[in-house]
Amino acid sequence: EVQLQASGGGMVRVGGSLRLSCAFPGFSDHEYTIGWFRQAPGKGREPLASIAKVTQFYYPDSVEGRFTISKGDSKNMVYLDIRNLKPEDTAVYYCALATSRRIDWRLQQEYAHWGLGTQVTVSS
Image (cartoon, rainbow, N blue to C red; front, side, top):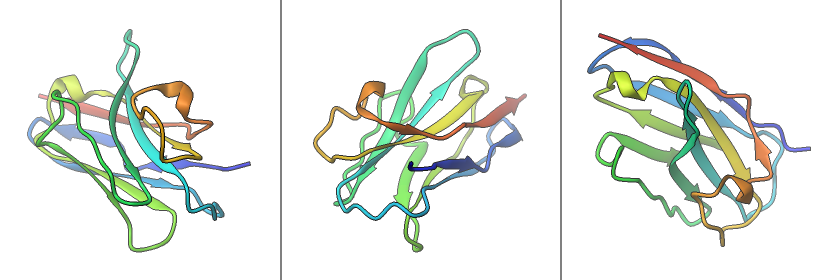
């Protein structure tokens, strides 16, 4: 069973920055996609970005220019850097793993493995 661990959330002020981390230790397959999603109170889970073995990444309009997805130097680590945080970024942030690169990254059902999420709270 693949275990994903999302971390790095916290309480930050408007305009601040955060780095979220997603660790998936022990996963050795070369074919995978990591996606980041978020869920704000009372709303559905929203796709944010994804990265695959050959460094493909996508940003929806709502976060483009402020969110950056990247791979860590150590194996099985992906980051989501968020800058210029806004109150509407308050949410639980999840990372997920799909065992394929050929997916529609925006669809939750493409991902078989999910972490527990990390809370991000942006205060004014």
